[in-house]
Amino acid sequence: MAVDWYPLRLSELSEWHETFAAQCTATGTTHSLSAGNVSQAGQDRTLVGLLTNFDEAIRGYVQAWTEFRDSCLAGDPNAPFPTPPSQPALTLPPGTFFPGIEARTRLLANIIKADADYTPAVGEDYGIVAAVPAGPGVPSLKASALPGSSQVSLKIAKAGYDLVALDMRRGGGDWTQVGVSQTATFIDTTPPATPGQPEQREYRAQGMIGNQRSGALSDTVSVVTIP
Image (cartoon, rainbow, N blue to C red; front, top):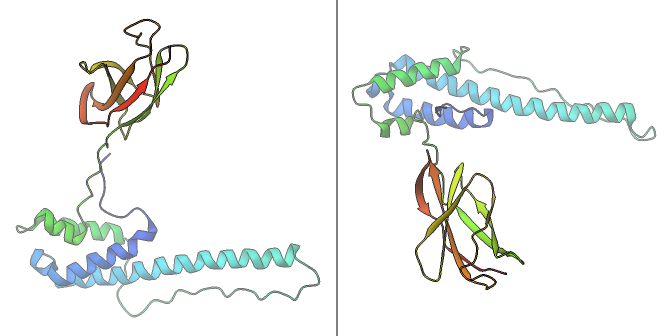
């Protein structure tokens, strides 16, 4: 799913529109916006701020009203009568306000992006470029010897990968892939080089994408098996 640049959270809208409107005022007419577009971006910023602030006030009022109601219905009958909370009121300052702020903002963003001088850096200034999703990180391992079996349990932090390849080596030899894990635990059942004898093993992990190994190798972990 594509990542969008317009904020999804109500709590982020006001700050985003502050940045967008300020950039429109600074450079909007140089990126194909009309003076009316710039003015409307400022009015939309004002309205978004009023709406989000009023939304917080309403939530606070609902909480205060709930406490007042419960005190009246189920509180101490000998306590003083509680003070009813004051209901907030939305007052709009003079100006030209219209509904559909998101749709109008997207139209302004499209005008800016269609300008001949538009660059990704310009888009970042306006906040109309989606953030690049972070890719997977580097897997990590914890190894524990399982008593009486010469087997090793590997706890895997997959760091965003669906699959992780697991390598093992012993005695300073070559690395050998011992498995691929989709889960957070993998049991290496490789038999010991010498039956009945403990041995030191090293393990490492690497992510996989499309059945191909990808990204950086994990740090190496060591363990001594228990026959």
